[in-house]
Image (cartoon, rainbow, N blue to C red; front, side):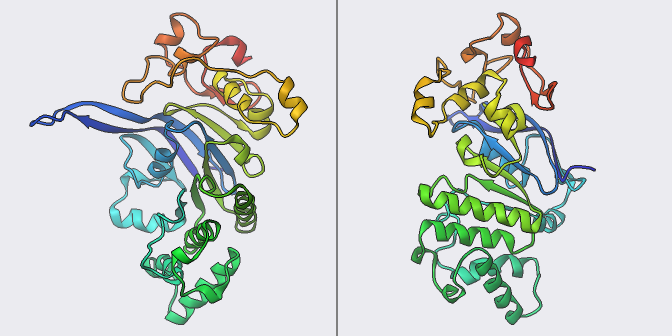
Length: 329
């Protein structure tokens, strides 16, 4: 079975110009620097990594909200880069996004009824105003919102309720793929679990596929089928949740997992942490070879600083990019 989404060698570089009169380009911020992954129908793939590693840029580039510099994105076998604006607009009916900030992503001058109805009208999914209103109320009930509040404005709702509005809007066009761009990071901890449970229920009921972006591994524990770990614009390891969190192989993944606090205070005190030295390199001037080698505790002299490791299949079914033979084993 072919994957629903296939991303190959995706690169997104933002040009940097001189401040002088001629504004010559002096470099580029390599926000995404060669990503490849697949997402199957009904699957939830978590994309995790520290702030600034290119997660959100990846999500937006997959939907072509940010045009890729290089690489291809295939959705349902169709290469998005070769589509016209009209064809891409039609394709986006099946590809939606839930943004990180539920307030900034909602038009404050529109009622939530109009916000949720906008995709229905844009893609002409309802035949009458009455049918549109009925569909809006159905979506509100599905996402745990009271349909009586249909004429209220975003500022009249809490953060969790506003994120439910964003989810209802994303569901309006009956998508197959939803990019969830850190949808719980701006919410209180007590509300985060509710939103995660809602997303999980919707994925199961509607056979949705998620590209779930997060900077916290604990946020994807009960939601994602697989996890892709990202560092400085590249994926360093992909595997199931158990593989990534219980037996991480890549040195960066080990450090990321060791930073997640454990609920058991005895286990928390007794475990050893992997502490990385040095600063995260700038995406404007990433190091040659493996991007992680300046901070890697097992870096090999010469090879890691000159050869870029490929993302390859490892023995246990996961994928990783590392030159260390002990890691590969």
